[in-house]
Amino acid sequence: MEKETILELRNVTKTFGDFVAVDSVDFALQTGEIHAILGENGAGKSTLMNLIYGLYQPSAGRIYVTDREGWQRRLRAKSPRDAIATGIGMVHQHFMLVENLTVAENIALSKWLRKFRFKKEDAIRITEELCAQFGLVVDPTALVRTLSVGLKQRVEILKALAVDARILILDEPTAVLSPQEVEGFFTILRKLQADGSAIIFISHKMKEVLSISDRITVLRRGKKVYLGKTGELTTRELAREMIGEEVNEVERSGDAALENETSDNVLQLSNLTVLGSRNEIAVSDVSMATHRGEIVGIAGVDGNGQRELAEAIMGLRHSESGTISILDTDPKGTKAVRQRGVGYIPEDRQTTGVIASFSVTENLLLNVTHLERTAHWNILNQKRKQNTAQQLIADYDIRPPIGGIPAAALSGGNQQKIVLAREISLHPDLLIAVNPTRGLDVNAARYVHENLLAQRDEKKSVLLISTELDEVLLLSDRLFVMSRGKLIEATAQRNDIEALGLLMTGETHKDLSDSLKI
Ligand SMILES: Nc1ncnc2c1ncn2[C@@H]1O[C@H](COP(=O)(O)OP(=O)(O)OP(=O)(O)O)[C@@H](O)[C@H]1O
Image (cartoon, rainbow, N blue to C red; front, side):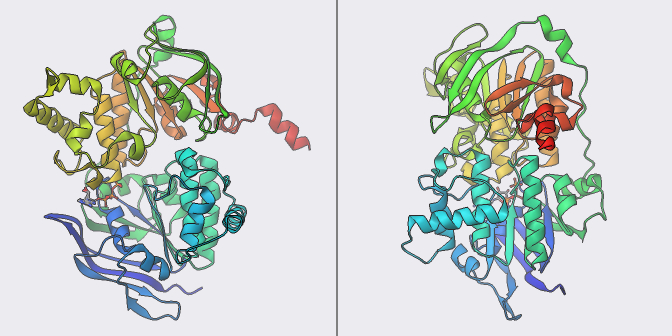
């Protein structure tokens, strides 16, 4: 199929007040191509996409689309509805789902944008068809609010696929998908590409970008600084384009596991069972302990009980049976857990990590310990509050470095940095980190890794729960895999990716050989 330009941006600029988020960007997308956009946190990627999708209007410059008849015409999308009508679909970095509706109802809302009524059965049918067509499994009747972030991401992808888009914008679509799901998703993208769709793919995962894209554009501080064919630059060279300087990988020294065999328990779980939102057994009879001076990693495919485990430890979810002990005490409720010296980076920054309408400063201090330190007789000391926040903003390179603006005005990665700054800076005795580098660029992810290792070196305890296997392998002193609510020690298998993959899918070598026999 001959490639033609389907979308063109000429000199597009977007300003927010005095701040230039997108600066005179030219960009052309061709039919049948997967075009990746790279850039560090806050580089302007989502803003650029929101301009195409009609969520924002350009401050200057023009956007053109080629219509189905082959005519190039100016796109003046005043809202996503206009963009969808032109054949543009988008998977947002932050979910745009109606939490109190079912999966099928969310998909029907997107597919039948102009229909005021639809039958429940029809919504379920189209959802089942989409799931079967694209190989993404999700229960059409489940309420969205009961789903894990990984499942929500699947619903977002299905929603975008439901509208038959010719131009598909994917803003970090794989952030919480499992490696197996990513492969399946890439097969879908290649199929859409072969059918002539044009795809914009935003991701911080360099491996993915290199394996799926045809061309790459790099943005740095709102400006386009590179456009080229995939493979022309190495990962390291691309990182340099993004950051403007050399990026080195984090190095891990020493192995703490042996030293710690005799040291004190920080977290002790005994026969813990926790129910999920639909009363299913989410965490099943889990026993384990973490010690001072080690990072204990829990790998696993999202939705296998990791969220429920973290929430139970934090006192946010009732435990059905078993015990949770922190530093030999049994704190009741989240406040008591926090006061015992526990930091928490939750999996979903949007719903539990930050309060979007609160300022950056307020979000940075939203922790009992920070509040106690900045208050005097229960009244916040304004000067101390500003100073603490400014220091954290500088340490964690939160951009823009302005404490007074609402967290909602920050890019996704910078919102994540707020959570990290708040939780890590207190050097808690126990840090529960769930997918801590989700949505972070290479530099920021490296900074987080360094901080987690520093916690370990300060003889603190870290429980790292992550769907990023590379991250868990890099950082963990001891390794577990969580699968269908069970926790399996896998330190001995850390160099055997195949064995880990089998544990993560809940299979054992025996199961696999049995199924091969059939
Ligand atoms: N509504 C808004 N009001 C004010 N500033 C904004 C708004 N939306 C975005 N910005 C700013 O524009 C810049 C670019 O943000 P954008 O979300 O496009 O970054 P990004 O490249 O997608 O980053 P990330 O990888 O972290 O998602 C950021 O500095 C952000 O704070």
